Length: 136
Image (cartoon, rainbow, N blue to C red):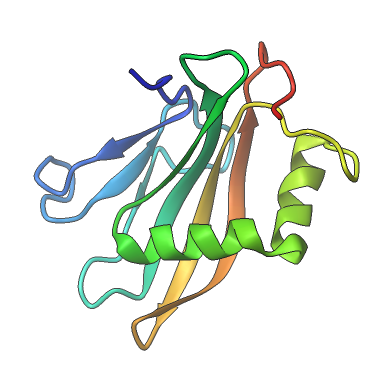
C-alpha cells in the first residue's frame, strides 16, 4: 500500500532484456538519458539505486525508499543519506534552500563497487513530484 514510484521501476534479472542482470527502468527518459540502467552483474563493479521520498497512508508521515539492483546500492544509499556533503547536491538539484524541507522526489544514483565495497555514489537523475507538498 505504498505510493508507487512515478519515474522509475525495477527490471527483474529474470526478465529480458539482458536476462540475468537487474536494472532500473527510467519511465520518462530525457535527452541523453538511458531508458534502462543495468547493474554490472557479477563480479559487481557498479550498481544503481533509487532513493525516493513519497507520501504514506497518513498525511503527516512520509515513506523513504532505498532500493538498488543489488545490496551494494542499498548500502551506498544509506551512507549517502547520512552524509551532509552528499545530501547538499540532492537538495541543490531539488531547489531546496539550506534548512528547507524536501518535496516528494525520486533520485537515481550510480555507485562504484571496489573490492566489494560501495564507493563514490553519484547523483544521476532527480525528479521532484510536481503535486507534492513539502516533506517533514
